[in-house]
Length: 54
Image (cartoon, rainbow, N blue to C red; front, side, top):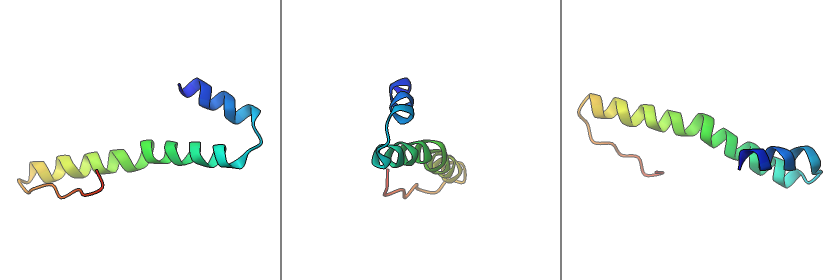
């Protein structure tokens, strides 16, 4: 699945696909670990986990 996306980036000139792929990489590598660490931290200190965006 990822190999298909990377091959599409190298062969396409459409900026929309590149921007969409970069956005997905950003979400997976940055936003998800931050929310995961936040949920673990809130669980450790015994508070409920208000994460409305998940």
